[in-house]
Length: 439
Image (tube, rainbow, N blue to C red; front, side):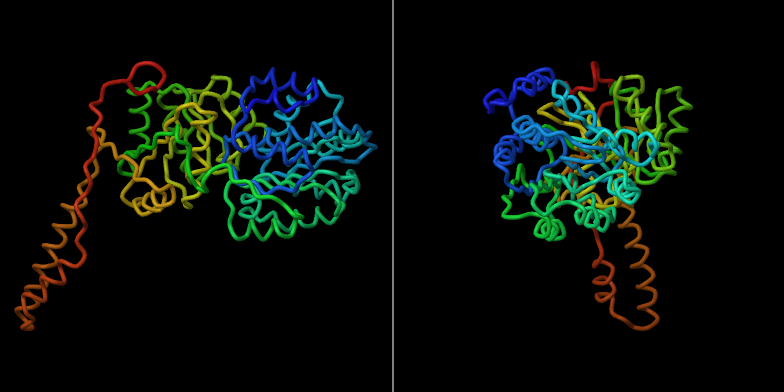
């Protein structure tokens, strides 16, 4: 289904054309028409499925159909989102959609000057994008008035719950009128999200753009077994051999991110880091430089796992596997977007094998293991066999002293053996030509 078939306002259609949008994604096909009809919606959609347009375009069209002037501090459409990065990105994206419309789009988030945000709010906001904490500050300071809100969007609802923002959200909802249209978007729909939807929505419809916790078909998953201490070395080797020119790398902690940054800078690579200890300005510059191609590598913690929209990103590397299997889906959602191909590459130490099994169980497929010559890990079966033999020998000695049968000793030593490892693919070590593509 094409955007041109929606009969949108000429100014809105012109903006869509300039964005290069032609065909709608599944979530856009299902959500835009129902939202224009005024329905409350609970939408399950992974990142990279076009959900921003799915909720922003129908709201903009409804504002075109019924223009209203906002007074100082008033808000017509409120979009709540969990992080500063997401709020900033939504502000930029929705401003592009509204570029030919006489509408005021504002964004509020921590890290920005409260005084400058206050001055923007005085002009009134047709659309206000905000993180819950910062918006609550402005409400308490009487800088913003939510009593005129007609449209409310809760973006990344599952993340809101994970980050503990739900109390702030509920406090803000008490300031908004009950008679409003509410759209709730979430990458995953847990029992907690359904409970929240039951409280917030009225006679809503449920939209599922894809099977929950699945990854895009355009993403190829690969695992490199490697000792933890050699991960940085392996990453540098792959950067050179595979000719990766634009790579997003996720670590599980800020300390891991900083240590990897130091190792890559030693190799004279163009790299920056994005985590919670960095100022908002530093993080914003790092993301902007990465998007523009000034940086070859951007290292990020979970703070950037959602909301980053980087065109043509072909590789996402999990330097460490995430603690939660669901976060794997969110991380790798940065690649393989809008039908483009991508690679999700994970470095997995023996200590992370259980986490890998949880990820494979969640996404419903086994990920190929690739052994890079020179980085092989010790064979677990051989290690376990040696341990079993040693244990069996000790038990045999004990049995001879205590007259315990040899058969009982064997059955004990056999109980914990591992199943044979599956066949592993091997890269020959030749550098791939081009931009990281497979031949």
